[in-house]
Image (cartoon, rainbow, N blue to C red; front, side, top):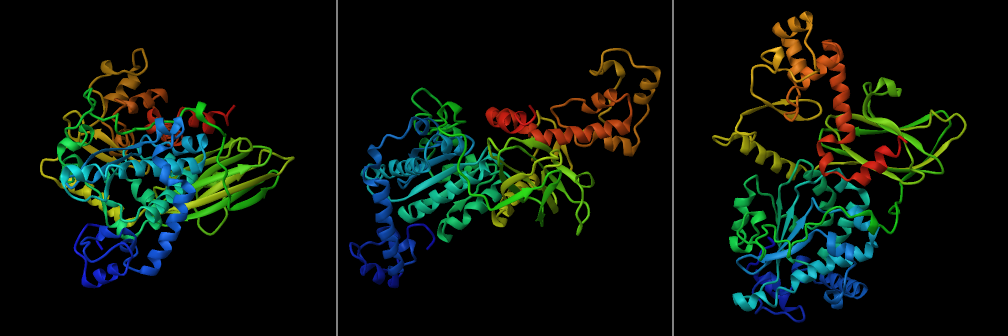
Length: 524
């Protein structure tokens, strides 16, 4: 089975003839999706049917289209049906950037959200009786388009991932063979990790339907449908009646759920471990990372009082190290997890042993009871290789030029990330008079320092890893440290740690309430 409509084999036709309500006259695998979804195993199909009837009764799916979901779902459930392909299959869009599962699960019950997702699928199914009348053919499949732009660590929140797994399981069990294709656009480097979390909950048949176009996805999507059935936002010609290219009347782009909708402060979590951190001591939880690209995810809560927490990378294997002897990955700070449980994650950029350290050294009188769960999330190798091959093909394409206002860029790779830099011989300004650093004239010694050529070692220190958005960060740090290269380098490392800790590169699209709760409140 390839997931597409095709002629049945003789053995499949005989098996289908034994199924009540179907027969050999039905020439495609969509004739009996329950049987096709279980590889024509009648016993498994019968079991699937019984579970489906039970689920439909529990969710009252017969009346699902008449159900009025809560307001927060209508406003922030990031999906929608818009247009159809050449064979009449509706296009079901899912906007990951606008998906705030944490906000939704704090505002409504898990069952209500699952029911809302079932209704979205039902609304797409409702198109089936209408579309065939126009096209003159029977249609029973949907094309799902997932826009993964903006995928970030917040989408790996454990209760949210568990809900996605539950929904996919329900979708496969109750709407078998409903998806013709799953098209993934704008997949980031974090996508393989996210896909690996849900892969066990979808069948092999469904996995084979996943299509990941490259950067030219706007040219690829029209191959699945005509441009007049595709929103301008996704490379087609369709707009709303007011000319909006996103077709907002059909696709809900979601967004961050306002806290005014919250009905609770937290989602109940079952933790895997419970420990007591003695007074004046700390607890180290080691997690071995075998290769770069894995995601380390944690959740923890404490009883009655706060607890310190930080993440470190061991520099010596096989022995316990103090915090000061290890490389600091996430600075240790105190969290009020007796009030609001803490959750977080980070992408591991190198192999090694990462240590999650629960710190109670500041309390000489009281021990801390801590409940926690720690997981290492592995990327899906197939999708990771697919994304890497697309990026490589883009770099090797004839005449390919990086986008930066028409300037060719060179890339300088660091342990933190890759920064695009202007392809110039040196970042040193032509003359001190053009500097935008501190106000005032340079001393003769400072002017002499700027005038002489940089050594290869110093030039590497001063030019590597500079963000394009900062015109002359090297000079600013140099002047701030009285032209001491060693102090400037130390300042640079602290600067990079701060950017990484506070996720500065994504702060404009982040969540202010989340940032306030997890960062600021713990400092007050």
